[in-house]
Structure formats: structure tokens, C-alpha cells
Length: 104
View 1 (cartoon, one colour):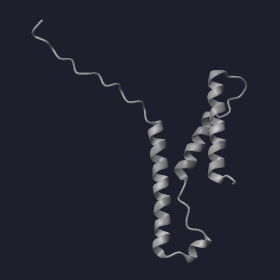
View 2 (view 1 turned 120 degrees about the horizontal axis):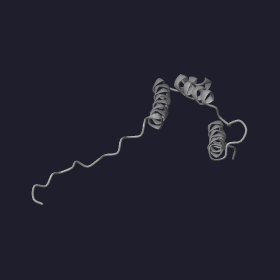
View 3 (view 1 turned 180 degrees about the vertical axis):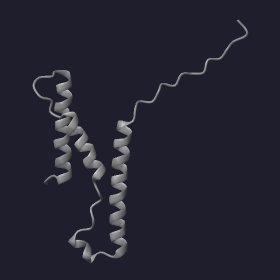
View 4 (view 1 turned 135 degrees about the vertical axis):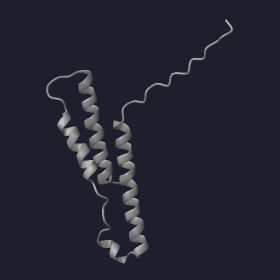
């Protein structure tokens, strides 16, 4: 069973990130991923559009085409939400409210 292009890309990206994390621990030479490359990668995600139904979709009903498009939009929305969450600053720790005791 062969892997899909998306699973192959996912594997390659994970490997690149692992090398980049290892570079953080023991920097030697050039980093595997530079800040400008990270920015280009994020811009590529931001510029991505859901795929339109391909040639085989000509046999689909309009409802099937709409479902395909809805799935693409949902996937893109989930991806953007995940990136947004990963880039969000860490939440400030919740400090319990201090209660004053009048009975010491």
C-alpha cells in the first residue's frame, strides 16, 4: 500500500521540524529551517484554497460537489485554527484570588 501525497508531505515536514529542534539543542552549521522559511511556510498555509472537485466530479450530483467543497473549507478552517492556536501567546497563569481573613 503506497502512502498518499499528503502523508508523504506530513512525514517530510515532521522530519524537517525534528532536525530543526535538534539544531536548537546542538547548533552546528546552518539551521535546517530559517525564520524567513517559517514565514514563507505560514504564508503558504494562509494562501491555500480548498481544492475544487476534479474531472471525475462531472459524474457527481450538485449536492455531492457542494459536500466536497464544504469538506475542503472545513479542513482549511481547521488548519488555520490550529496554526492560530499554535502561534497564540501562552495564556497567563491563573492566580487564585486572595481572600482576606479577618479572623487570625
